[in-house]
Amino acid sequence: MFAIAATLLVLELRVPRDVRDLGGALLGSWPAYAAYVVSFATIGIIWVNHHVLLDHLRRVDRPLLYLNLLLLLSVAIVPFPTSLMDEYVLTEHGTIAAVVYGLVGLLIAIAFSSIFLYATRADGLCADAATARRIREEGRLFPIGLAAYVAGIALAFVSPIASLAVYGLIVVFYAFPQLPAASR
Image 1 (cartoon, rainbow, N blue to C red):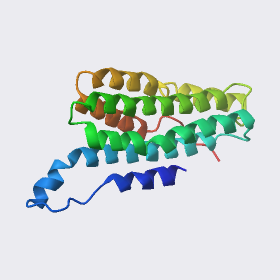
Image 2 (image 1 turned 180 degrees about the horizontal axis):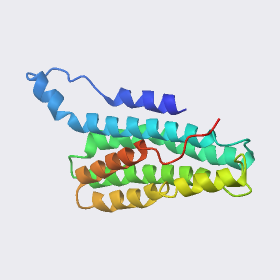
Image 3 (image 1 turned 90 degrees about the vertical axis):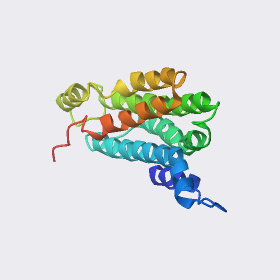
Image 4 (image 1 turned 45 degrees about the vertical axis):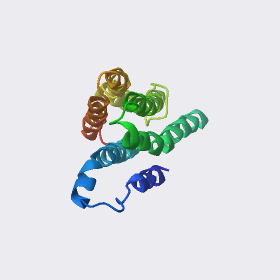
C-alpha cells in the first residue's frame, strides 16, 4: 500500500503543454514538486519507521491489524491532499488545501501513534516488557507529529506555503531515528 500511494503521487506531475517558455512553466509548477517531495518523503519515512517498530514485535493481534488498516487508509489518501496543494496552494483556496493536507497528516500521526502506543504496552506485543519500555522511552518524542500537524493546520490560516514548510519539517524530524533498532 505504501508503494502504491507513493507511485500515485507522480501522476499529479504534469508536463506543461503549448507554452512559449518551458523553463518558466516548469519553475511555475514548483508547488507541485514541493507537494510531491513532502508527500513522497512522508510516505517513505512512515514505511521505514513502521518496519523498525514491527521488527520489535514477537507477534501481532487483531487490534494491531485494525490499527494498521487505519494507517493504510490514511496513507492511501495522501495523493488527494497532495493534488489539492499542487492546484490551490498559491490561490485564494490555499488555506483550505493546506488544512486538508494537514488533517490527513494528523490522521496518519494518530494512526501511527496508536500503533506505537498499542504495540509497546508492557503486556503488549514486544518480545518482553523490558523491550517495550526501552522502545517507549526511546520513542517518547515519536507522537510529536500530532502537535506538529496541528501547528501546521493553524499556520495554514496565516500562510499556506509556510504550512507546507512545516509539513516538510515534520518529515525531516521523522527521518532521524526515533526508535531503537531491533537487536537480533
